[in-house]
Image (tube, rainbow, N blue to C red; front, side, top):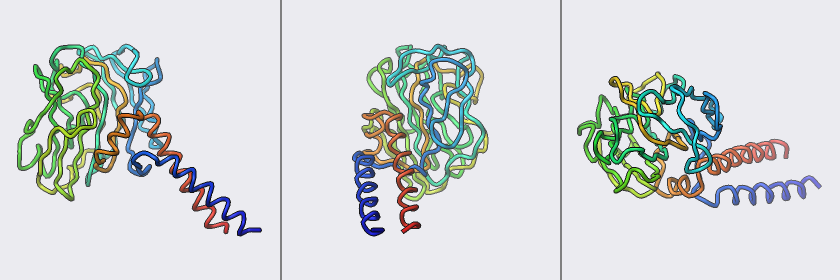
Length: 263
């Protein structure tokens, strides 16, 4: 009888895992934080991962319709999100967010998402380009420069998903726009410098006045360099659905562990 129950449990868990991982699988342990901005009001941007890095919303941005659900409209002068202090991933990282500029070219430097002593996803003022500046044994992009291989879409006033990755084992550095690889470099194979401070979304703390004038949605950080198929999953399914699948996968893995213990 126990054997029959075990077989049924294995089949159920296997089928559920197959459904949850029909797209490119993302390991739940690799999620650092996910901020969907679907609250629609208030001053807290909830981290829907299990890591509790809820962001504080400053400067009274507008809640507007986003790429998926709601989003934050930043005014370019005071509005931003501050994520609590924590140490960044060091061996590898992915940062990703949807952005729609409210100006023809980027209004300010550096404000997309930053942890200034480790990384900055850096729009370049007066252009449509975005740089991916990392501190790998020092800042920036050793042995290259912070703005090397910056790239951008034709129209920044449309919604685009900007994703950047770094893998210190391979030295591979990428910028993806709308899940398409647009820029690549090989850098020194050195882990990211450790920064135990806050993460800022919509603000560059380098210098006064660096606030984004744009609508932002679905921000995420991972402790691995996602590959293109995984980034495509984020783009097509949205972070909310992807995280739901990731959490389901994690819970089902726990269930499978319980089955193995109990039987």
